[in-house]
Image 1 (cartoon, rainbow, N blue to C red):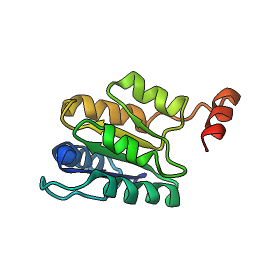
Image 2 (tube, rainbow, N blue to C red):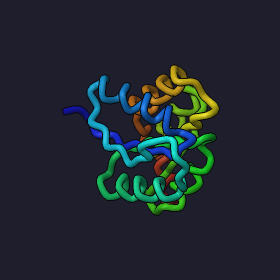
Image 3 (tube, one colour):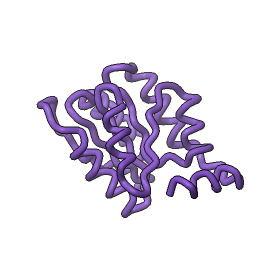
Image 4 (cartoon, rainbow, N blue to C red):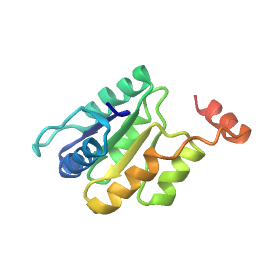
Length: 143
């Protein structure tokens, strides 16, 4: 079984979550889905909290998707130990990991297409933290 990734969405991100989840499984990842499991309205903070706490507890990486990605990002970043980054292109995804050691990727399900989302996920999951002193110092100040 491959590397574990957790994923969750609200109703606005449900369709993209299902697409990304299938892509990850097909790529060999083990995926834990925190919901939502259909397009019925739900409150994104509930999903962000449950997934975020799991990411911290298990030291994993997660993906959260809502309509714009903003709400999930704000909610997830309220959790101690979470560094959630809203990414809308490959370069931002790379920097979020390389410089900011992001442990949750947030996406806007109503704002980016499936192929771009897939590329962003690939870049994000395959970029490591640089561990340069300046970045480590800055991350330490967030924690």
